[in-house]
Length: 248
Length: 233
Ligand SMILES: Nc1ncnc2c1ncn2[C@@H]1O[C@H](COP(=O)(O)OP(=O)(O)OP(=O)(O)O)[C@@H](O)[C@H]1O
Ligand SMILES: [Mg+2]
Image 1 (cartoon, chains in turn red, green):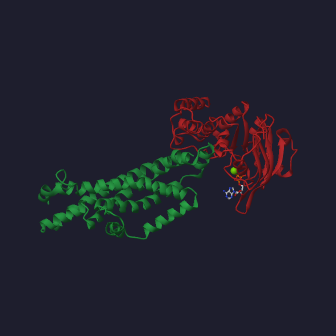
Image 2 (tube, rainbow over the protein chains, first blue to last red):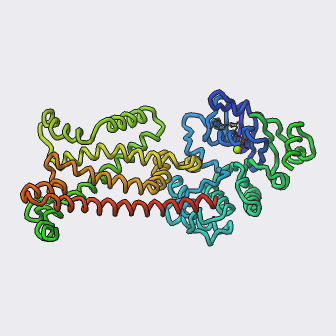
Image 3 (tube, rainbow over the protein chains, first blue to last red):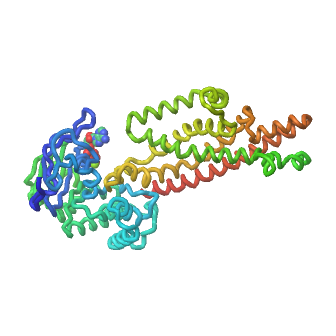
């Protein structure tokens, strides 16, 4: 299949995912266009994390198909490592490498995966961290940083590899309230630069302001997929409505 | 006892070195260090075999641990020393026998320590490494082992203490370590067993309890690092 600019970045076609006998995803269909920002929400256990983890093959699917830039991600000749360098991922619990400084956390992928020279990679990492206000924390270990700072480092770590799309799994829900803003505003900056983003989050303010569309999931199914304006004007399923009420 | 030390202290410390073969405490320490140095990479590989996810490798690991657990070290020493010469065209010196036996033995115990440390790493570390596009060996050498091995330094010290004590079994096959030298000395002097074996006991005690304290200190330092790590997250 040839790759054209019109291809969506990600196409999710009837994707199922099983843990033993339990079906966490029951036939998901969706697609993510270039430069699009999508917020995924839904009750706990609805399969949001599982869905985004299938996209970079951290979780394998039991049926269906996922196309990244038009190519099946399970296709022969599609290396899973290459796929993953093109898909950045940010986790709820940051998952920084505790034995490395902030700068080395960011530089490691550049050096080992993209094979950039060490000096150049460290330079890039320092500049990236400085651009998110962490210029003074380059040599600190993750445990010496606040939660908000750690999450910004982890976003830099993913962004450093210049991915085509960024996946966020509840990036602010492990943070103290006063630190949520700094992470969301960094995500907003990324979106402003045209980054394609898929964000699992319950920050509806962020969704209204930044997202193009909302995906609402429940029980392993995609219940609603709507442009932001429709979603918040109430043009959605009853389940989504009651979910929105519950989180406000 | 002071008199005894003045006269034979050197023999107990280094054997007949430099005029003859090395022995005594120096031999005990050097042999133990050598055993530890050989065991450590073997134990790491064994632990990786167990945690890799491959069933055959995991079965090999389990079999090895069972094999070692179900026999006394002394018996292994006898087998290597007295039985191997029947099947091999050469026999092994007491030194090689001891190093081989202790390495086979300690690798298994140390592997269990390292395996536990690897399994204690949060799953998120693997997720993050995979998501960056690291391959298995990159994740292992850049992320997993640096953390896991740091956390098992206290276990490594305990294993070293065990090895030091195990080398005393070398006495049985006339391996020239501290216990053997002390025993030889006792045979020559005949009249001072209490003094000689008191010196022997004190030597092991000082060496092992010193290391044990070092291990405790390292453990506290590592735990402090982990603690501040947790409370910040
Ligand atoms: N590794 C796993 N093994 C077994 N079951 C799992 C596993 N991961 C997820 N599940 C189950 O799959 C379902 C979906 O989980 P998932 O983590 O995707 O939900 P979520 O929408 O992200 O929820 P939350 O908002 O709590 O993060 C849950 O019922 C969960 O228990
Ligand atoms: Mg989740």
